[in-house]
Length: 150
Figure 1 (cartoon, one colour):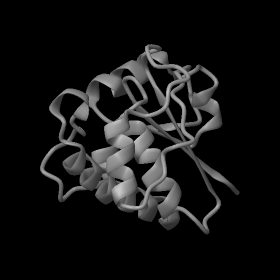
Figure 2 (cartoon, rainbow, N blue to C red; figure 1 turned 120 degrees about the vertical axis):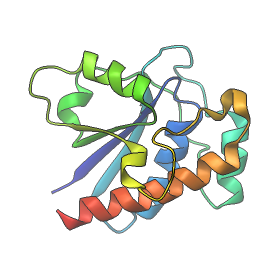
Figure 3 (cartoon, rainbow, N blue to C red; figure 1 turned 60 degrees about the vertical axis):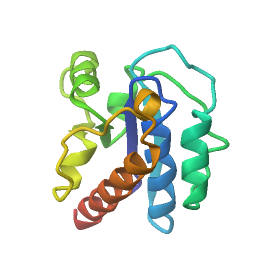
């Protein structure tokens, strides 16, 4: 049975598409589908931020075909996991979720206990794309292990 994972940040141009690219590569060979979305609608249809794309490419992840979209109500019953990058977006997701959603909502860094932060910082203004990518890689490995252990 296919496991479906949706990564969510605010605009879907930095953190969540990076997580989609990383997790897609890690999950190759497993019956896992991966997508990403934003809670805001500012960037719908746009590619990921060029800095995120460049940093991901430097580590072998391809984000070039990804386009931003907004979370929609049906996502809560299509995906098994909806993974937020920070508490603000998790709160937005909890407010959008229907009663008894299929999806399990969580923070990405819940799957990386060795990372001292609990939220993936937004690199859009901080310009800390390498650090953010490392956090996403570590948490993605933890998430994959958790999924495969079920």
